[in-house]
Length: 131
Image: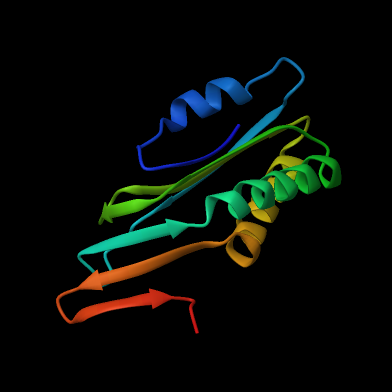
């Protein structure tokens, strides 16, 4: 499953879907809004381009790291400190493949997916990573 949504998600449900009899490892990554002087964060995505890019990244990870499953959920909209932003859940026969696949997906997502965040605080707001 790959999803871009304004709703929160259940990491537990993602893990349940990833568990398989042939999977010896399920690895999760959960990104949250951290308190580094901001009050909230606003996330935007160009969904028509982001979804195919996430599919491509997922496919690369599945084949490169011999994953049995990989799910990606990314939130958009206004989020408060502590809210979930992104979750990645990968399963594989062994832990090394599951860890590597999960790491690959988050790193490539950050580089390639047209998803942007704006940090909003008392002193104003700024887009992160935009030139």
